[in-house]
Image 1 (tube, helix red, strand yellow):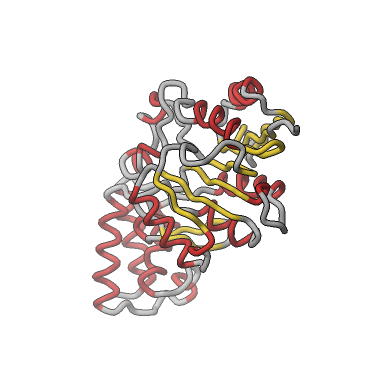
Image 2: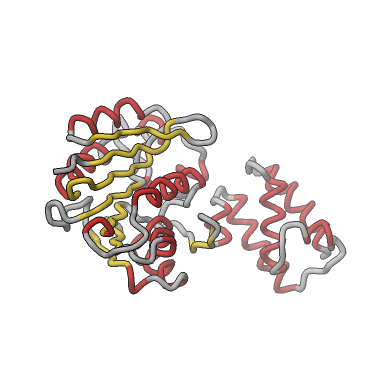
Length: 286
């Protein structure tokens, strides 16, 4: 079969299955089996698929038509300009989390190896945040923390892929329990913050495939986030930074949590859609 015809047939199949963005996702799958770019599907429509490529396309298409996210079907996604292995062990990295990384890079020192350069990524998932920080801040000492052994294994694989596994310590614990008081310069986290009632209505490719542990934040969406704020206030050094990805309507509540925990210089940053997305606060200087 020629790749142009394969793309048209796959688009029709995905559309009939109710898959969002069927045209684009069909392009990705055809390009994947050809080992080329999405645009090649249209630039070289007469290129023929080998029998092995056609068989692989059918396998990938079945998963996508059944509702699996494209990133899980491809086994990778892009984050901060780099490719990360992605599968059901962890939440799919999203562009909003790049805003969290950008905020962290503003406060993590470029040089020096003191307490200010000690950074914990809590709920590391794929490791995309910890790995990116390690690459962008070579002087930093990083910990990737997660309660899921599967997520930590995936994070470790991504760290190895990008050559920073030796610079990141992988810790299977809940929150910041493994760290002494006043030992960290920054805590960065994309915790589960979706209220349970909203989780039940998420698109099926998210709700049925991505780990609920990484999404469901309890009744008010703050069941994990609120204790983490309190922990961070204890574990951060004076003048240390807490940076959190938050839900689109959680800015005022998270700001209040951070203020009551003793944080100062609290700001809530918005994403490109104008929603609250990243909360940043600092512990008091002594």
